[in-house]
Amino acid sequence: MRREHARQYERKNIECDPSQEPDALPDPGSAGLYDALEMREALESLPENYREPLLLQVLGGFSCQEIADMVGSSTGAVMTRLSRARLALRKLPGFGRGRKAVMR
Image (tube, rainbow, N blue to C red; front, top):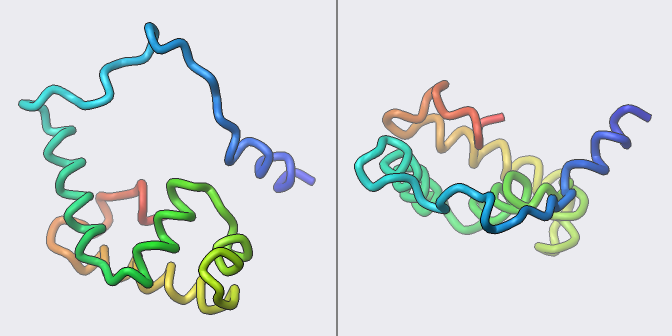
């Protein structure tokens, strides 16, 4: 029951007042922009069949079964692709244990 309750909030879109939101992009001189660009390049270096399920899970909040239905594959294949995508990212220089957003 606790997991189902948590799942309700995974994909919940919170409406925010645009006047209250911070700038979408960090200051160009900040490390945040560099990190975002570095992460984007790392994700683009992944093969499409690894990148798509990873982005659907991390950014979209979809379950493995939902991703499998979307990409026309089995749940086990999606789980394998997610695992291999994370492993491939960990092998990139500078992406060991420090990048927790995608590595979880």
